[in-house]
Length: 264
Image 1: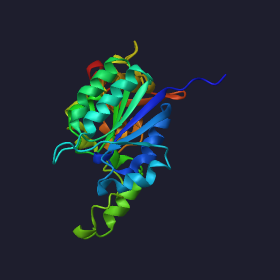
Image 2: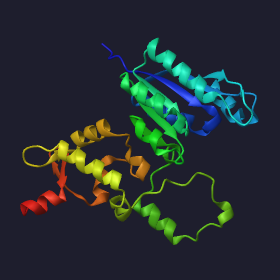
Image 3: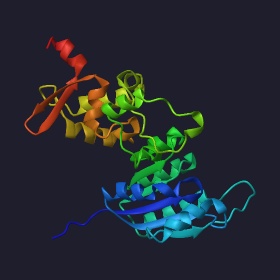
Image 4: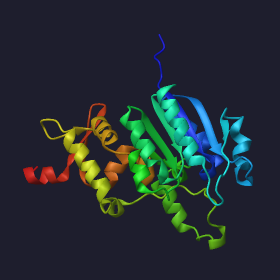
């Protein structure tokens, strides 16, 4: 018998999001469940939405027209919120995908989560932190669809002459990978990792990597790719804050401070 997959409603703020990332957004959501509701909201009379018009049929996305009732402002946000609430109580999807870089969606995300739905956010790096942190998981669009730079590729790139400033900004570069020093200076990240490792620790003081990942997911919006690392293990190792060991088929870790305190 085929196990029923979670249903996802994808709501896109087309006025505020690039159409070029829709394939990777759908690929990410496919890891969670089936995106059977797909809607893009905007004033489709605007020339700026021509890019979205080209992908609507290809990805079976329903366009929802939203006129601008006030000059200089759009009403897309309000339209998305109303439909999200309607979907929550009628179709009752298990999860929502919200594509936008607008912090105005933060109260909506908090309400959806309070009612038991997961919320996966997608937006630019300029997205305000309240919206990012409110989501079950938030991914920066700049980090999606591009390979994470390896040590070898970064070394090779460093040896090449830097391109002229005018050639920058094409959006094709691999996402920046933060080094150990930068990761340690991120107080929120360090606290999140240490709390998760402590919560998942067994009687011997070691924590299984899988349990740590689950603890992190329960605590906050998090994805290692936002820091330039494809896997949680790679990010944890890069922080140099934890001892790592392999036991059979799984990795375990512990805070290095614990080892020092115990004299291990």
